[in-house]
Image 1 (spheres, chains in turn yellow, purple):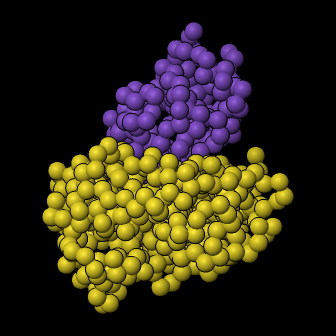
Image 2 (cartoon, rainbow over the protein chains, first blue to last red; image 1 turned 135 degrees about the vertical axis):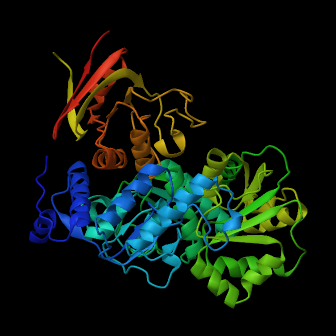
Image 3 (cartoon, helix red, strand yellow; image 1 turned 30 degrees about the vertical axis):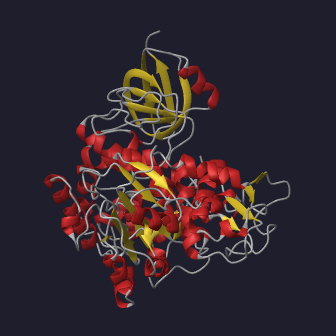
Length: 421
Length: 142
């Protein structure tokens, strides 16, 4: 086994110089370093913590223990979603015990000095990590966005280790922190796909789902696509790839910062998969578990809706009527983005159409959908993947325009020309 | 006494009925707090993990599995031990936190593929002894 070299400061932390919480957290980071075969620890500039979501007593006991031991984050730390909408508590139908535990858990993380951002899209906030910065981010879509789109460096962190990294400022020098693990492992050639399809956010979600399936926990690289791809499309791609597979980093040649050229991220002879429109259509249909054309809910905003998505939705809603009263529309976003969407008038347009705007949490994690909802439509590959198992609904996957048209009609409306290639 | 020698992912000693999983499993979303497999796509849906030496080819999916495993360990519904083919950080962290908070230990071993295949062909009671570096996995009966 590789010997782990600790700094003098690490030794002092283990000796208790920074308090009991830092000592406990550094022991955890070292336990991870041993499993990952790291030879040293790295300092990180920021952390994003996913452990604030309530999964039961143990997670709550852990964060409250850190508080009792005097824990305090050492670096700027944002928080992922919790199990409640603290601003609109009536929107979540959690059992009283669960709600009480969830509320305590969210408060306990805030008490450690974390910023109460409550979003899975911390990359939509004002302060973003710079390219090349080592960070400790948790939550699979946040991780893949930070690595791929921002060019920052985080390994795939999760519960417990995220707050341990925030309190110590240290992580193992392993995984995606290291150059050799950031090279592409498979190429997706998209040169045969129609440009109209690649101008659709939902197509990037489907492409991401395919990339995750092909790459597993490797690093996919996309070639042959447009040279300008919006962050909303890259968000959709990453979130889906991190759900169907364990992707923590992807490249799009000519678009993402580490891939100005294919050669910059790939060795000659990299395996290639040629993507065809029919394959994307097949995945769209696989992500659709509902049999009929009936829908009774629409769920948007997984990962959290961005300001540009609000703008686009407001434009879609500008002409045409309100949503069918039989279809309840839920839109999840962060407090920060909602404040901007309110200021710019987008949120009002969305509310007037009949949508419920939820913050701080997500509709596939916690009971928010009305109890009678059987079939929900979404433009999110990630929501489509997780919701049937998590909250027991059938799903219809489609583009934002298809979602809006369907919510107005009260049944699935497809733009088959889009997916026909 | 023989046994298969592998790497220790988390130290401890435990024994129980061997349960070999035929497909990867995510503890988050794939198991409930009573220790059942609830993943709708899993071939062994409904199987009970509690108290068993669970051999799983690969862990899969969400990092929230750390919290779910820690909670099962707190509630006494967790497996007795885990045997993997490669070290898994998410499961190790769940075991680490439960040991730290509640003093319960879930030994986790990682075996080479060939040794894992030998174990997976077995049935009956198994035992896992893992120290800081090395893990030994033995069958206690045929």
